[in-house]
Every structure is written in C-alpha cells, then in structure tokens.
Length: 160
Image (cartoon, rainbow, N blue to C red):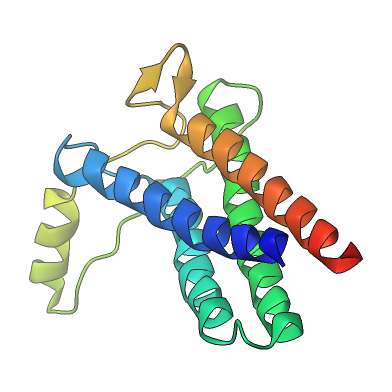
C-alpha cells in the first residue's frame, strides 16, 4: 500500500504546486495567462478535489485508488494541453486564432471598457522561458511525467 500512498500524495501535491507556480508568475511576475494557460489550470483545479477525496476515503483502498486515478488523469490532461500549448508557442502548429477575454456583467459601455482594459495575452508567444522551455512546456513535461508516475504507482499497488 506504500505505492498507493505515494500516488495519492503525488496526485495532490503536483497540481497544487503547478497552480501555485502559475499564480506566482501571474501575480508576482505580472505574466497574465492566455486562454490555453487557463485550460491547463482547469485540469489542475479538477485534480485537487479528486485527490482530496482519495485522502478522505483512504481506508477503502479501492475507492481511494479510483480517485487517485481520476486525479492522475486530470494532471495528465493538463500535461497534454501544456505540450500542445508549447507546440503553438514554438510554431510547430497553429493554436487559437482569436483573442479572448472574460468581462463581467454590466451595460455595453462597461463591457467595452473592461475588454479594452484587459491585458491581451497571445497563446502563440511564450512570455517566459528557462533554457528554451516555456511555462507551458514545463507544465507539459512535469505534469505528464507526474501522471505517468501516478499511473505506474497505481499499477504497482494493484499487483501487491
């Protein structure tokens, strides 16, 4: 059951750390997310409560493993989106062709002013990179590796 415990921990810690990093870059670094950045976050948002449920029901190993698997799947989805997004940034394929923003409710003049005041963040331009790898690339690599590790640990736990 040590493998299941480690899988459970990874399924919770990885999305929390990835979200913390994303929000750190946004609020401390001033790098506003594009639409595909949000897609990656949504998958991590889904993984956190699934992993928490896995901890809550850890006395029932089979049910806990199910929720760990679902959380791992969500982490993997974020990784795949990150890899796709990195490909868009590197110009390997085309991504979104339109800009997007999410204005709050109000009259037409308020909506227009909100849209005009929103930062425009392109999905095909990496605002930051380290050793040639963008934030989306790091999310893609780290989240995909974590998802594979979670899956491997679940398979190991199943055999024991």
